[in-house]
Length: 85
Image (cartoon, rainbow, N blue to C red; front, side):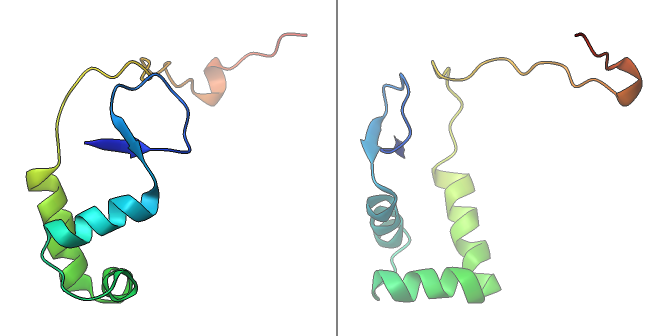
């Protein structure tokens, strides 16, 4: 697992640039063309994008405690919102 290098935080994950992540993903799914061809296929070929999304769901989905994640605050309805001055 990796994290984006340009997003600060306390994550223990290795930080890499998005371009490096794309290169790793391209190799992991066995694409033999260029990175630009890979990106083009992801944008325009729905079946190829589904293939890559399936790979990510099956091979790259993990549950773990992350130091930068906080519990979400409850979402208030309009009627529950109040102004304070």
